[in-house]
Length: 197
Image 1 (cartoon, rainbow, N blue to C red):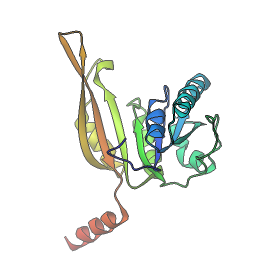
Image 2 (image 1 turned 180 degrees about the vertical axis):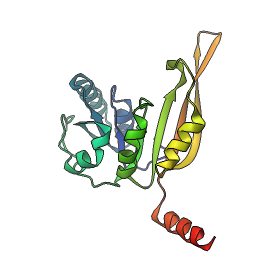
Image 3 (image 1 turned 30 degrees about the vertical axis):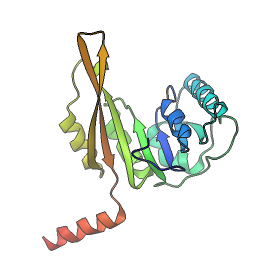
């Protein structure tokens, strides 16, 4: 959160089951939007965000109902399904206004979600894909995932590995892949370089 955003930036979790992304965002003074199709997840997110606000978290959050593929339309209209108390602070946002998206998507859904995720990111904004290798029967093909995400127009930025110890004999890990939406200046420079070549 601190490495990829500044206070006041908008953070998005397109599948906010437990709302941990929203809670961390508002604890650090960011604005946060969570997306869910499950009202029980929304209720849990509201409770967790409200608790963080009661503990002094300065940021604001809202939970929207919908699917990640609907993000540009949902953010534009931004009618919260539930809003933690106190209300306010998260309103309508045009496409391209999200600074950070942190998600752990089902990999089968990712190709359909990437265009919408890219559309809502601000130039220079980041998409972080958290891949929990502990929950997978087979490791994720990281090279193929990087290629797929780059094909959507995002630049590979960083690979972070989080280690988890289970007991004393088993060491497992989660991979976090960071991608960045090119800035307008970078896009123009790349186009100029391509024409010159």
